[in-house]
Image (tube, rainbow, N blue to C red; front, side, top):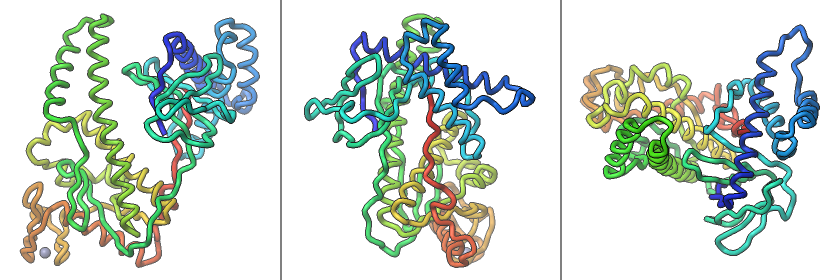
Length: 398
Ligand SMILES: [Zn+2]
């Protein structure tokens, strides 16, 4: 649960300091881990590094002036990230770069250190910085045990509280659905719905193009370039916020409405995707969505799948991940598989039986059938919790 944080200029200075030091400590721990030779014995873990931090603080005024709580937490987060890496659930911890994912974390928040001021505002106690106000866009979370303060590329501060997720209240519906993903239609369901992730409006998009041109013209390091960069980042962030919001709403309604949701297995999809129609032979207006945009799409898909699984696990809804092979080429009516079945981006027309359908809906029906087959055989009942345990993002220090 994230809120916009409004530090005073003096407090902002302090928060920036915390970010820099959290990043510094994280990078130091990473460097030590990278350079460590096995013959020196076991890699220094959190305890050893914590002792070193105490020594470093004694030797450096700069570190000593900062918050021990913030620095120590960065070490703990690093140790946790290494554990996740060894366990194979996350990638290897990486170098923290200036200006990217700046932030720090505070855990074991004392009761009373987050308090409401009025209907619209609350404040949080940050070590060495004091009480910082944030805007309440929804009720203040109760019992938050940790929070993370972040600075985005536009210079906006946010505070995020880690909360125990509540299961979605639902009554079993007995309904099952297959969900196909695409570029033109973000999602197509087996019962015929075509859903679209909100994008920038045409005006916003034109504005973005102008801004990007301006950015390219401006001299590196100039103030005007920085202005342009922020304006671009602001638009991109607006788009990303809309997409996240849409993913939250869409996954909630899927989990509420269906007892079983079948989706493509993204790991398999990544390898077979290029053979599929929607990206290899996209419709008009899609050509531009390549490169970076495809990367963004990929990340959104992962987020969609992850949020769906997390919510499904809590609500005891089954999510089945199926191999997407031939889902767009198989005829739902007769089972005939042929590349020629796909007439265009939108139209499926079976060359064997003449069955005509919306291409994405036909694919969603195939995904549903594959999902049903998996659960019916009982050999691999892919309960959501099996394949996609609620993953908590690796705690990250600045
Ligand atoms: Zn057919």
